[in-house]
Amino acid sequence: MWGPAKPGEQVGVKLTKGEENGSWILATVSRYYPDSDIFEVQDEDDESKLIKLPSENVERLEDSVEGLSKGDMVLAVFPDTTSFYRATISKPVKRSSQGTSELFVQFEDDEDETGRTPHRRVTARYVMHSPDGDDDGNQYMDDDEEGDDDQHS
Image (cartoon, rainbow, N blue to C red; front, side, top):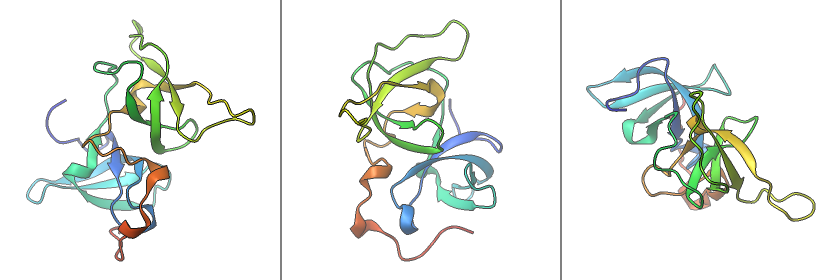
């Protein structure tokens, strides 16, 4: 997919200010300002929350599993949440003939009571390579990077 995400499109966004610095969440594009290359997105978890971010912090999501294979480190939406976390693709990637592909991943720090990490099924749309080589997931926020001003409007 080329070009900026369009209004109404669901995207992954990296938050840059406040208590959630470095976190990746699901959001929907509200507006794109081409003159400043800024997106205004709506948090999928809080519809009253609009966030303005530079385009480098907005990642378009794809339904394709192209370029993904077992053993790859990715960011994936943890089931029943709207947050991306670090994970490893844990089973061979199979392309679906029905159009919606799913992957099995193991999330970091997701051990059950026996110490085993479960294989979790995630729709391919909610799995992405770490966009800029930066593998920061929600569990890996640096305390010293917290911003002192908030970009939420």
